[in-house]
Image (cartoon, rainbow, N blue to C red; front, side, top):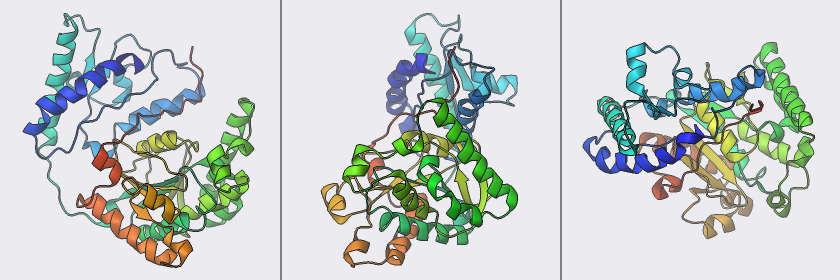
Length: 378
């Protein structure tokens, strides 16, 4: 929770410095700070969204099951709620409360966190990388800073790669309700059955109500950057955004923060905000993300690698050490959608295999979690 974020920011570098060198089979230690948990309205139905998001974040496969929860102690959202089903003894090993009366001074708190982290790292270090089929992948796709080329170059290439992944048995999730809402008539016919189609309509309606409660509507979605890039309205944006889903049947629809329970193409409902979408896709089980951009953004996630795809070659050249793949070659005729789609597919496999690091990971360029909290705070 936010009350302990400063402590986490202080202690994680110490853990990396003191402990991580002892455990060569562990890639990194990350602190997942968020601004939730103190005064949340426990009885509000919408409170289920951030709570299940945090619970499911703890279950993301990229953590290998080794999560340490640090709380203050007096918050409404108690740490045990984030690790449901644990035996009392196991919960004691995975939870640190800074208000614990056994701690005398800040150093004692820090030492306790480091000691518990040492236990978690020792357990995680027993794991070894092994060959897995592509069907084990859960890939999220998202666009941020779209422009008029997004629906012509990068997003169609992502859609082609998405179809390849689904054919290989993998899971692909696309999101951003306001950025597909005006293209939903193109998506519902792809639902595998009536229940999935109705779930898609349900999530569109839920978000419409959420926007209406805040006195806004989806026509407010295009940003100044979107407009400068040539997008006139949210309908144009939606038509370009939906192409990221490719042509595969939609096998499941998730409400915000829900965990995927099937393979294939999934619509995971999220706001369009980049980091809120990324956080919710992580909660849904995403292990790697593909992020397209026409304006440029130094986006990165600490909990999953992000492959950034530029819509235009001039952006890819200007941001040469932030963009991983140039889809602008489609517009210039150098490559086809299929060429770039196959290149992206192979890059996804290389990144998942650990043989290639995307630029955001090379720089260590990560942003904090951004929880979606549609519920009131008391």
